[in-house]
Length: 166
Image (cartoon, rainbow, N blue to C red; front, top):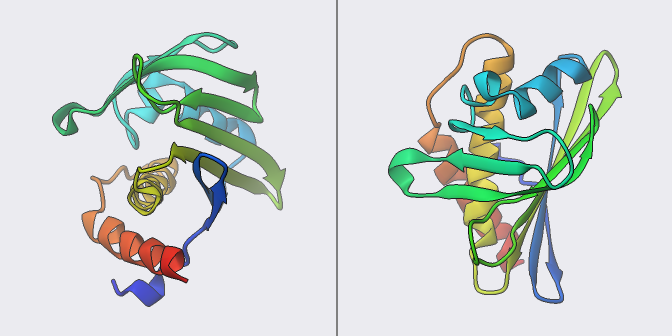
């Protein structure tokens, strides 16, 4: 896959870091996509094993295994089946808010994922990783879960790096 095949989302500079915004249209009902984001038996197919207490201030625990990344945070916003937000962090680490927004649209769902990172962290890498996971989500919604698409990740990372250089 070449870099030109990747249509990166948007990145903007914040006072103390960056914000990436990725948008996808999923050809499934909002409630179906919501279950993929919130039910452990569903999100393990495209994200990682874990659990989310479905309430504001509920515990979020997602373990990315071999990568060593463990999310251990709390739910920041919860409005089913439209909004879920939590920090993509652990412990005393810097907050990395992650916001999933779902809107019913045209017989499917418009998904907007917003991720914020503090200054000094690689927003291109983070957005590329989420591009790959969104591909995994789309495949899981079709009933054919896939492994992490590393080629997609590399191409997306180059596309986001190009975007940041502009």
